Length: 294
Length: 300
Image 1 (cartoon, chains in turn blue, red):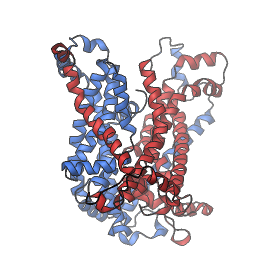
Image 2 (image 1 turned 180 degrees about the horizontal axis):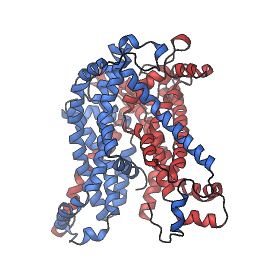
Image 3 (image 1 turned 90 degrees about the vertical axis):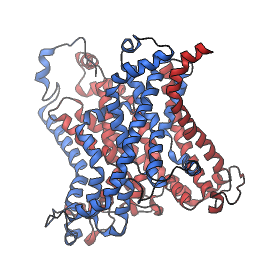
Image 4 (image 1 turned 60 degrees about the vertical axis):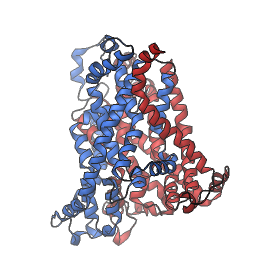
């Protein structure tokens, strides 16, 4: 967002709001219609999800597929909650520590890489960044063998480790961009040699980095919570996260009962949706910093 | 030496853990994976180390390319990525354009458009499997039923159960989920165009359309490039959506990421590693030029 220095005609700006210069009322109406059409498309799956989750088994005929439930029932929600609750708890155990640790590592990396111009710093940064685009399929087999050989048990422990390691590139990128955007004078007022750097990091950079942390924590929380790939390879429905349990529920014996899996889908998405709704401003900032420019 | 240690000690200590982890988990394992992909490690006994493996060079890669099954996966990947890319770019760009100028409730609409991004592919897959139900006529539900209700019966189709084009149906939820993200990228691009530029063009007598066409759209090229790289690399790695809507065993929706999982499940580690390597190579064609260009713009 840039603030223009030479604002040409501030007085005329508010009057232009409803339909900017050159715009005609019907163009404005057309634009609104298109926007609302988009909203309808986006919300169709949400409508289906909610109505189906409240339908009883007798209400599942395909003729009434799009109709509201005849009798609203919470039964599906109870069944889904009982099936998913343990895995939701495990997801928390996986996501919270891995998010915190990879954020801390990313903060240190970002700080060092933005402040310490050692020869090859940019190359190191680019090599780290590549990890962000790495198709994990290309390391999966040796990764399984390595964790097995080292003795990291499948389930929560493996997944914490993997989310920390493969979270490093994105957290480093976000923090590096963040520290680049902080005026250098703020940090360089103290001495930048050796031990000075550690002190500077701890006393000055870390407190300054709190907005960066908000962005990184949201981003990593969402990524780790929604992960399915690592979950499939490094855990089972009995010891894995909620994505795996949900997939198991939707494909399992209850296959015929869409109501339960739809209620389960909502339950499994609630934490990330809450984060998104409450902190959407930072969520957006995270998307931006996680993608454009280095 | 002591002086060097004091000078570089602390910062080195701070990034060393990450460098080691990335070095081992990314570059080290990539190396091991390439090795595994060039062995005859095709059985459970070899996978567990009870029987020896031998080096076979590029045999696995060539064999994979010669099987119809894997070529079908590659074709699916191309179809899926093309649909996903075009759909998400068009939708995201349109939404950004619609919301680019100030509008009452604009933020609210942005929030709605972007929300699918916060949901996992597995959760949205549950709904989309219902929507993309292949039943037609009397027993139709999902979108096919909706088409009947609004008098567009001709649009009914078997969705992901079509052998050749089934994968295109799976791209629909992917587009649904990521168009909002592309919109957010383009919105940032639109806002990066200085107001003076627009004003200057208007002063010169350009119509509103000409301002967009001549002044604003060209400025969005870098954003478009970023968006393409991000969506394309996500698309090439797609696995979750396919697994939750269809299944690993479904031939019609197979892609390399699914093959990799199937080979692994069958303890054919060599082929599994080779498929992973194929994915890496495909993605590298996209990512390496992008990273090099970003690296150059940083060092300049």
